Amino acid sequence: MTRAAGRPTGVLLVNLGTPASPSVGDVRRYLREFLSDPRVIDLAAPARWWLLNAVILPFRPPRSAHAYASIWTPEGSPLLVHSRALAEGVGRALGPGYRVELAMRYGEPSIAGALDRLDADAVERVVVLPLFPQYAASSGGSALEAVYREAGRRWNVPPIGALPAFYDDPGFLRALAEVTRPPLERFRPDHVLLSFHGLPERHVRKSDRTGAHCLARPDCCDALGEANRDCYRAHCFATARGLAARLALPAERWSVAFQSRLGRTPWIRPYTDLRLPELARAGVRRLAVACPSFVADCLETLEEIGIRARAQWRELGGEDLLLVPCLNAHPLWVETLAGWIRHFGDVPPRSQLRGQSS
Image (cartoon, rainbow, N blue to C red; front, side):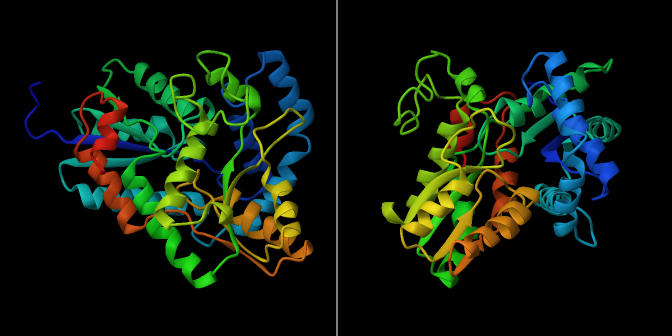
């Protein structure tokens, strides 16, 4: 394919989003945008409107605002601070032939604004990298849909390619192990809990192309195949197995759980808050928790695990709980992303991404 001389490649890193501030009003605006997404609350529009406006928004924003306030920094939201540092680092690593922009699926900086800036830089094409290691229709799927929709509103639609989920990519696992190993060596935990963000069970079942595999039996996530190739839960277990192997963790010293469930419908199990009492009863006293579904520390890691789960653990009689930091803008992670982007073709198959990091 002939390339336009001197035109840079645009890179769009997309994360989930954050309120503009921990005020109740800003949190309410953020939650309204986030939970109005039909890929997040996948109910019929009238039911989704009622749930959001009659059940969630009248009560949840003050609680969420308090949680955000407990982790807010002088520079702002930790998720935004770490994501900006990552984007800046990737831009420096890639050099002058690239223009790197950060966007949030919900809130600011917006996808539309990022595409405007890339257009102003006259990029030849746009490479999109959703910062979600494991694929879910409500995260990576929603981010890509929003990018394509926004790009399609333009008269001159830019050529766009997207990198796939990277849950078992060797480069991702290598960076994850590099960040996780030092705090574990210092802390010397009795057990390592790998806590991933949860999803409603119906989301997982909808990803099953056969309709007969996901959550149909206890070992459904033990291996990846055609039925569960897009299954978020299976991706999480693949990440967990890869990370545990690189850390040389014995099977009895690590386990997987899922956090952040919302509402009364069944979410994927086991639940993190219910796994903690089980571990305490089993004699675990020093517990380390890593959160490999997040590439940047955020509300779900810093507040849900670092504050609430730690308090729960101590109430259960645990000696201490260590929150392992996320990848954030670690130099190896920056270089891993830059390497993926440098070797990226127009629309690569999944195998192409994995082959670049081995």
